[in-house]
Length: 288
Image (tube, rainbow, N blue to C red; front, side, top):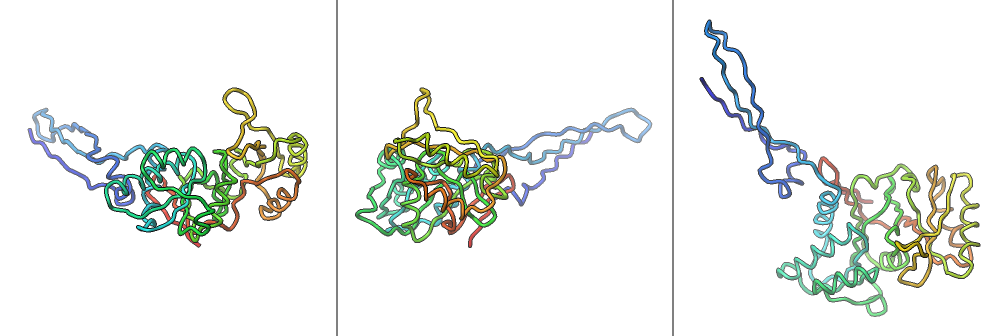
């Protein structure tokens, strides 16, 4: 009986992005074949092949976040985003500060939630009043179109996010491949609009009517207790759900902003410097 072990090399496409997450991941395939001799002996071939790792959405977000932190240099004033992907970025920055690989960082958080996380990691913080111009902002996105325009704000922090990111020299977006759309609103998930509490229903009706052609549904965002969700700025959010992508995102943004009582919308247009997208085959950077 003879035995042959063949070790196949890891995939060149995915190995660089996934090796640290899945070291030594492999599967054993055993093949039994009949010998051509008159005896009815069998030969066993053990082929040990690298198995394709199964990446979760959190794995993809972490890969994109790690790549984004490459843009961070010591001494920078940073905009710190909000949301599940941005949380990985903040955690990585805290880790690098603790290890001494980064120093002199000042962060400007885009939400109370991010502020709490950054403080817990020992990241020095400031506000736009003291640092009106930032070197870099890193944040996630809910949708990314081919022109790097975005929908943001499903985490409820769209107003502060837009203020901080508009004040940044560079704005790097981190996302997984599920966030890619051919047109904004194309995911059929929420596009948020922050509105004042006073007569919120009046604005909900007007927003729905504005996008009748896109088959828009407008809903007041509720919290886990079934009460209206209140932003860090004490406002409500009306979520717009589109049956079809928005035809003219720039025009839509102007018309939404023209409504009295609308504070901000989740269309982030012509703002991103680069978008880092993590997918099953690796990490891709798209830049303008």
